[in-house]
Each structure stands twice: as C-alpha cells, then as structure tokens.
Image (cartoon, rainbow, N blue to C red; front, side, top):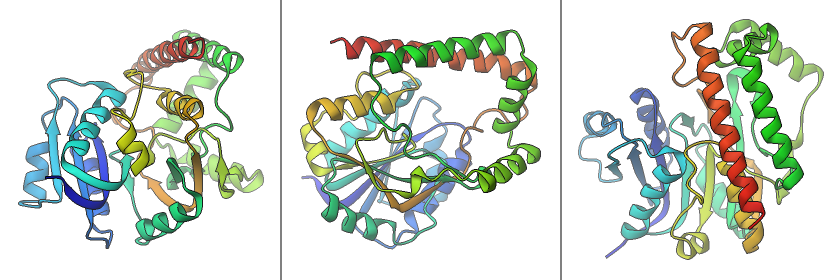
Length: 301
C-alpha cells in the first residue's frame, strides 16, 4: 500500500556529501509533516552511510543507489520510479543537492499558488546569493530549430575558446566558478547598475531552470519518467519544456516562492587549477552540444 504524503522531494546526490546533508537539513526543517524525501545516490555509494549517520532511523528519508553514475535524467527517473511505487503524493519536488529553503512557508505558499494557477510543472525563483543571481526563468520560450542551431554554435565556439585559452573569456568563467571575490563584487555592481528583472513576474510557457522543478499529481500519474530523452547532462530543461508544450501541459514560473542555490556552478572545482578547469570546460561544452543536437533531432520528430 502506498504511503499518503503531500510532498515528496527528490534529490540526486552529486559531489561532496556535505551538500546533500545540508539540503536534507533544510527540507526537514520545513514545518509540514506530510512530506518525504527520496535521495538517489548516483553511483558514488557515499550518501547512504553518511545520511544514516546524520539522520538515524528517520523514516521520512529513503536512499536508493545506482550501480553507476546515470547522469541527471536517468538518475532522477530512477528516483521517480521509486516514488510512484511507494507514495501517493500531490507533488514531486525535484531539487539539486545544494539547495536551501530559507522561507519556511514555501510549501504552504506552493499549495495556494497551485490552486490559483493549476500548473502541471512549476519552478520557483532560484536565487544564488553570492552572485545576486536569479536563474529563473531559464529561457523566455521553448527553443525552435533556429534557436537550437544557434545554441550548438555557441557551445562549439566556447569549446574553441577554452581549447585555445582565450584569456578573457576563460578567466572570467574560471573566476565565476571559483566564486572569486572580485567576480562576485563585479556581479553585484553590474546588478545594481543594470537590474535584470524578468524573475519578478509570474510567467507561463517559459523554460524553467532545472535545479528546482515541481510536478503536480496529474503529471506524476500520467508519466513513467520525469525526463525524456535520458541525456546524461545538460539541456534537460529544454527537453522538458518541449514535451510539456507538445502535450499541452501548463508550465508556470512562480516568483512568489524562492529557493537558494547555495553552490551553483562550483561543485567539483575546488582546488582545480586554471588549465584543468579549461580542459573540464571543453568536455562540458561538448556534452552540451551533444545534448542540444539530440534536442534538434527531437524537434524534427
């Protein structure tokens, strides 16, 4: 028999275990009792013992392990399959493992906003405090063929920039990912002079940023997977937005609720040198281009 809860959080463990533990602490601090958490240890085999030590005998948390790193889409889909088997829930909230819920009324606000908007998929204001950055909406509209081709071109150009060590581009990117104080100061000044405010308005039909996605009961019951196709990394938001557009499922950006993205973009690069960063960035851009090519194929289907 499935357990009845109002909310199930789905967390894909990646990188330092402390990030996942801190995110769990933040979710558990939310006052609602009708919640559960599913953590997918995506091939690291480190999360389960650490979670068991920090949260002994806490039956609100379920940890499942994969044999290897399945990537973002397949890893989250593994957790979603477990949720569908074990829970009768109104919402599945997919979050990165470096998120913080500073607003303790997040879930109560979410229920009210759902009654008001009737979304199938929603995204909150995703705020990165160190950079004064609001990441939602991720894109103003679903990418068409020309947009996807342009994205591929940008990814390929960035690969060349990193490969040839074009100093300014590489250095700015490196400082951003390392949370360099000078870069953070620059971001704050830039934001003060040229405030970017699309995040302040509720919007429909936009592409939602993937670090926090909220799925309603109708989506949960009507789909076997959250993310299709199962690309390893990158552009998952675009695939999801295209699926929802084709199926007529309402996607809504909700600025009335906020999550804090505490380590956005910094996972895995502490202690990394500049040359190593550039090599890793070439691989990331290659994966981005590959995912975008798959998106282009999906558009033609």
